[in-house]
Each structure stands twice: as structure tokens, then as C-alpha cells.
Image (cartoon, rainbow, N blue to C red; front, side, top):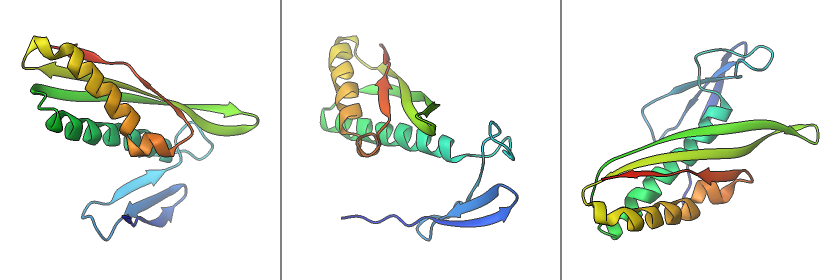
Length: 141
């Protein structure tokens, strides 16, 4: 078992700050601007959830690619969290991941696709949430 401690302190209005005794960086968080009292330009819980899925996907991909000896030059991934109202409640109903991988060898395209698919299925954050996670890959060589 592993534990991860995150602390939150309210600052003012709809803003707070998250920190961890395990980390040096603090992150200001707030209600997103789409909601009453929301604040623009500050990370929201919705951004953080989407980022958690995206960053977990990346770290899982990096581990599987290394174990599979997949040679690549670049990896990036855009993501989009979809917030929708379902039965009167707001839910993050879907998170769309759009990874782009640039390979060293064009012959590895199919293997890279399999590794990306496996990475999404193995991502512990994706497996821990109810939202659908959609993967749309781009592989170049």
C-alpha cells in the first residue's frame, strides 16, 4: 500500500491552495469560471482530475514502453475532461486522451499502438474513476 497526503487551505472567496508535505510546489485551486463565484486562470478540481488521468497515462506509458524497449523521440498528450449533468448531478462523464508519439523506427507503429492501448487499460487513476476514458492516438515515425 502507498499513501499520498494532500493538504488544502482556504485562501479567500472561492480560492484555496493545495500542498503536500512530500512536495515543494503548492498549487492554487478555485471554483472554475463556469460556476457562480468561479475564478479564471486558476486550476480547478476538474482540471486536476483531468490532469491526474493524463499524467497517470503518461507514466504508465513510459514504464510499459521502457519494459517493451520501444524507441521513441517524443511523447505528448492533450486531454479534455467533459463535465455534464446526469440525473441532476454534475459528473465528469468522459476524459479524452490524445497522445502523440514520435517513433525512432516506423516499423514499430503497430507495437506502439498496442502499448498505448495497454497503458490506458493499466492506468490506475483511469481504473479508479467512473468516467469513461477515450484514447485517440497519433503515431509518427
